[in-house]
Image (cartoon, rainbow, N blue to C red; front, side, top):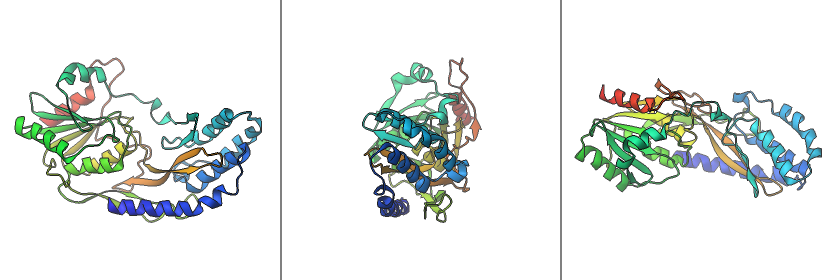
Length: 336
């Protein structure tokens, strides 16, 4: 994690040095704000080549409409239309009156999550510890942890109580980690949770950062490692199944990338939503902010994770299903 923080600091300093060059030459009017947004992304967004985006073509298509803009709402909508062409959930435009967002990365995919099934079968038995909800299934044979957001913190004490509940009271033989519909949060929490399933330091991915303004100017890959947990928890000898769906995004995507390198771990469900670019933000001349993917992240095989991570066992919940076939598949995987 220390190496990652050093790299992020270097990226921030690089971008900070060029901020004045980009912003001070623009004034606060619709034309300049549109152009500033286009140029910031042109110089700093990290997936133009990977996604084969004709960014100049986008500018040529949309810029003539700036002279038709009559108010800040129309300007916002036009600029949001520009960044929507990036098809990236990490790219957002922030104004005092609105926030743009791209939802195309999950809209056309099955939800693969049945909350009614979960609540009807064991919601009354769910306990809470930090950001986790947990219980046991199959008469105490399987531990189940639901983690709904990597923005929700947790402590070593939370782990200790969950571990005691699973292994002292119930003697579980396997653990299910349900991160479906988890839209992300802190990469630190992703690493911290994943570390409970590793016996030794492991390279679980890579990252690169922009070294110049051109679309293909990147550093050599920097390894991302996952260390064993510093908490007195070691679940690496257990069968573990991670449940995924298309709404697993950003830090959750990172968590699943890490877990696929852990021993005894199987990922079941649907492809994740991706979000493999570490985001940074930049202010526009009018005070609005744009967030964008600046640092591409890769799995252990140096494959992009921006468009999602495939599960080891792909299965889906059909629209008319009353049960949760993903959870049931996970249970079968542990008890077989």
